[in-house]
Image (cartoon, rainbow, N blue to C red; front, side, top):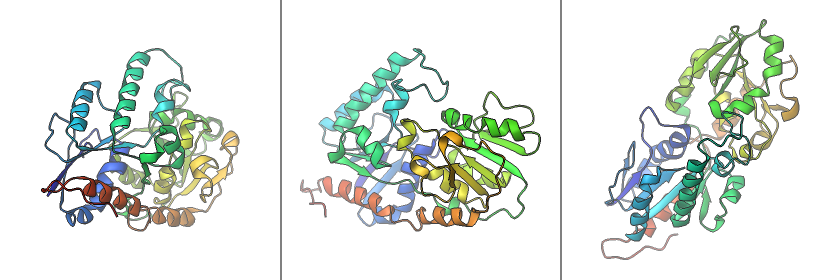
Length: 336
């Protein structure tokens, strides 16, 4: 029996990356792993336990854990590192901070130290997983990088609201500040005519005419979308280096609400039925008379754990890890 440790956990602080990249893959591949004699522990935090055969980490860890990671590598443990965001652009100030919009120096030294530690961890990793070819190129270790796509869980998106309310919904965390800025023109033009709801990020230019709903746990996100019951969901994406590496999961989730979806026709959204406006012109018009919810829902279902071919990439990853761990005789299987 192999023992694997997965960093992410179902606690209140679980972010989208952990949910999509750790909780869902191990949930939907549970039987696949059991058939290979793998026992998985999904923890909320990483402690100095070196008894596992393989370790799955995501994004960055506190600098305090770097010596433990080095010790795990020295003991021959299998290290898998997942990168679902272009942290190289986000944290190193190559572009303005996506939350503050400024290239401030505060915390830059710590960010540099954390990024240096991340580089060391990526170097030690036996395999790196990521979401898109663009992000794989940014990591610069393509010889050991496997693209394992984001997918949605249809069980999280049960039912379609029957009464569309005329509400316009904009969702996203504070890291989407620059993306949301693209709809400011349309908001100012229509705030007295439409019922606007901002879920997650409340822009500083939002006025009393709009409703703001703070962010919640990722697992509750689909349920909140259904309760809001929007008629339109706006998914704006600014053209910049950071967004080049994004997946299209936001438009897939929007497509499961039964709302009509309008998205930027750029980057990961190109070719999606919601992608109807160019980034530089996004929503600078009052015409939202779109009727694309059925097409958007179809694309979302095609990119779900239940129907996407993408799960094969995750199974390939798990097969590789299982075969790389020596059995009780000390032999390592040859991966198929």
